[in-house]
Length: 145
Image (cartoon, rainbow, N blue to C red; front, side, top):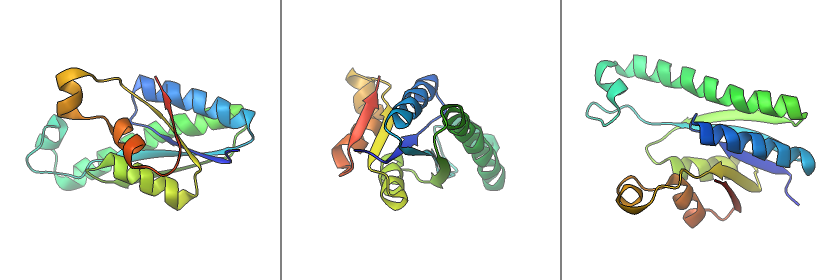
């Protein structure tokens, strides 16, 4: 069965719920987990308002602090469940690619991630990172809704 699960997180409540379920599942099958977060690249022109006031260095520092905060949730859940845990983050404007690459590099055999369930125009415009991972990954993906 599965021995190593990748648990991507964006820091949302839904993502945290998927982490809890993912670590419970990992415990039930004696698997390890790796928490993973993708930091967007810094852009001078952006839709992310926090980038507008930041210098590149400040943005990177704040982004890494957020990554550590989000990944601490994975570490805590894994510790509570008694599941071996590793964490990592990467910088990319294509989160789905970074997630797939991390799963491959870490030797994960299952990606467990949340879906925000965006539909209609919002789903078309924003897109779904979960959908992109499902579409492009050769590693199985378990979606928590």
